[in-house]
Length: 184
Image (cartoon, rainbow, N blue to C red; front, side, top):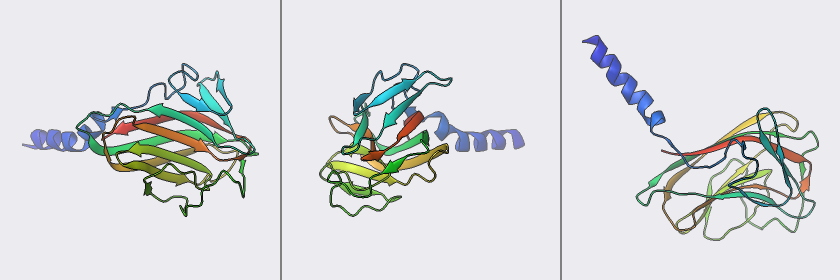
């Protein structure tokens, strides 16, 4: 009697992780910048392991983007996990004309019908049906490796679905070691 119960418990708790579908292509940067659209300065880092260094621009946002291929029947949660390391001199601009006047607090979860760029240390967005979902992220300690994990709930299929990782105007760089986005 115990083995069937144990098997059922294992399936209940382990099966959801096994069925998570990876949405990003080249999230480990083994192929450098391949599969990514980049606006701003970026350099592949050979590794090991390989990575991608993104540079903050004095006046403009630096964008790393990729189209998502969600199933048409998808109305699920996208979980994004990033391994990154900001340079010791990483410093977002305190004020910039590139910041849109929207009041998004870092660590929050927001939806907006237009694409905006609020003041944030790092911004993750997913284009959803009807607009954009935003996760402004605080960089905790420049010069130290960090893991960032955010979730976008109830994401529905739409044409031209896209994920964006955005660095604000400022100084320094950010080493993106790996990124994944999975659909659950």
